[in-house]
Image 1: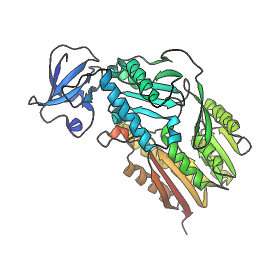
Image 2: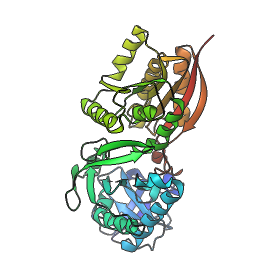
Image 3: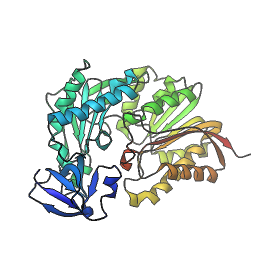
Image 4: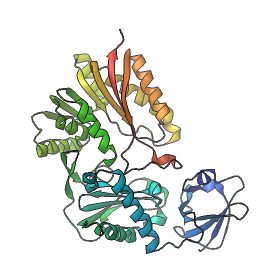
Amino acid sequence: MSAIVKLKKGEGRYLKAGGAWVFDNETAEIDGDYENGDIVSLVDFDGYPMGIGYINDNSKIRIRMLSRDPGAVIDDSFFHGRIKAAWEYRKTVLKEEDLSSCRVIFGEADFLPGITVDKYEDVLVVESLALGIDRYKEDIVRIIKEVLSEDGITVRGVYERSDARERKKEGLPIHKGFIGDEFDTNVEICENGVRYTVDVVNGQKTGFFLDQKYNRLAIQRICRGKKVLDCFTHMGTFALNAAYGGAKSVLGLDISEYAVSQARANAVLNGFEDKVKFEAADVLDRLPQMVAEGVKYDVVILDPPAFTKSREATKSAVKGYREINMKGLKLVEDGGYLATCSCSHFMTQELFAKTIKEAAKAVHKRLRQVEFRTQAPDHPILWAADESYYLKFYIFQVTDEK
């Protein structure tokens, strides 16, 4: 180790609760030389060893812990153990057919802080968000290939999507590009019986929202014979699952012309172009127009982008979620269904539920909960890491107050 970092007395509460982060205001002193990104030892205020992690003075998250073992050696063997455990976990918790496209590494929740790796059929997409792990990303990719090959899985290509703004907080440049040989980056996948073409270069995040996998499956069950509205449709994922589940008709709305073009192409890919239509529109403006027109739907789906990415903006986010749910509820036929979700970890389950309840009261609707779900289990929730629990998904039956 190049340096030893000591915690202030009484600090490190998040770490001691099982988390992986040490914040910049929690460290007292550093003994030894280091460069940002180096592996350092961490000790408590009294010298008790806490483990090892990588340090970055540019970040408010000063140290991201890699191991609680102060004697751990960070080498190929270490990463192989972490990656093998992550893959064996997914083989256990996912249906076999869902391993074809899934999240292989989910950062802190897989004890590899700062890196995400998604698998789309025979393509890997890597997102690196921390300086320390950035140094190891090519080694991690190589070892993932080795672990997958043990199950007879060959990786055709790897693409890096390290283009999130969070990298700037680490003093890292935004980067996109191939790791290794170039390949066709439009990848066809199949999930829940529905086919999609995933653009790993230009799609949202790493190309596709794998976390909603089983929530989309839940939508199939309630849409048979129904008229469905899918708001913030993105690539048409919920809309296409509604069609696959036997919906009578489906309309998907999204503000992005590019997303709508992808959604239409995916509808054609599945032979649903006559049943599923998509419209490029600002959902917040379009829904009140529909209410004024007297339009009603049997099923309304709300999957908005995160209204808050910081604790400070939570109050504003509550207002946004209340507004969109009020607008959506007004469009649900009496006895119909509302599916609504939040993908911000700052919008807690309790706060989200309270906000939906307020929205229903404001528009004189009664809600009967069908089910509550979170993210798919290949995006595991580490109870000690609040940031790993972000997706909340409800399905309600909606009735008018009588």
